[in-house]
View 1 (cartoon, rainbow, N blue to C red):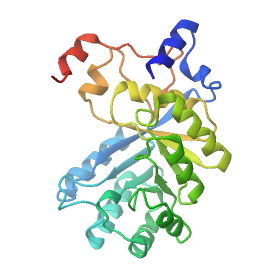
View 2: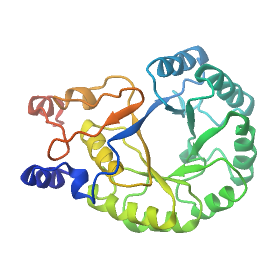
View 3: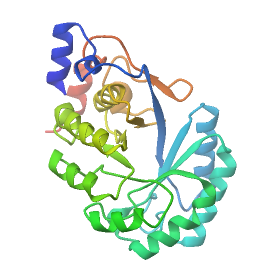
View 4: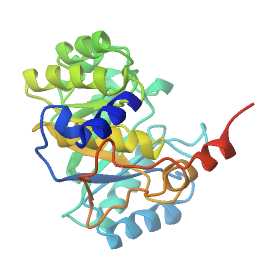
Amino acid sequence: MALWDLKGKALGLPVCQLLGGQIHDKIVAMASIIFDMEDFDWTLNEFRWFREQNYRVVKGGWGMRPEAVFGLDRQRDVELIRRLRDVIGDELELVVDTPGHHRIWDVPTAIRRIRDLEPYRLKWIEQPLPPENFEAYAQLRSAIVTPIGTGEDEWNVESYKRLIQSGGVDIVQIDPGRCHGLTGSRHVIKLVEAEGLQFSAHSWSSALNTAASLHMLASSPHADCTDFKPHESPMQHELVSDPWIQEDGYIAIRDTPGLGVTVREDVVQKYLFG
């Protein structure tokens, strides 16, 4: 990502222009948080605030403690999603992130549970099964109408290729901070486009990863949205002198050379380990 930034600055061009050309001038910002499955009022107030902030796509999942995560209690899960839909209304799109790593659901259970949520019109269900079980994802996808999002745990182009060819995904989640930076992510996007799928950016770490994600999304007609921290955090708002800000549910692509952010070296030193 740093090399792409340097190249853009050397040529006086935004990185998206180097990735094949800019198609979008703004990207949908998906406000993403962790549910509190033990305090519905807190969770509902968060989503109510998202709506007030004019987000168009919102996401929540998992839980504050391993003993209380989304997916463990069927009745409680459905009740939360029903109340969330009431809070955000019909016009906002809702994504639910399930802890597939915890192996809470097998395929038959996932089919039943996702069908339970169909009345609430999810944009996609995220990682409902262990991420490495591509065959299970293919079985699940053939049995439900809700789109499936997964891919955040893939680390190279070959693993993404296996995922995409498995037939078990609708929204491929790409993290340029994991998949060989923007170079590897660019190769994955070509695979996504060839299969006629969509992709989102699983970018919940730093302003630098957000910058790379925005440029990769801006350069493809198959781009959907990017995860976005709705609240201030050091790595998003201190690390750079010009942090990303959403307006009316979008983040604008900057026309400045490179990735479009300026790193604060004093903050880098502040948070160094060792």
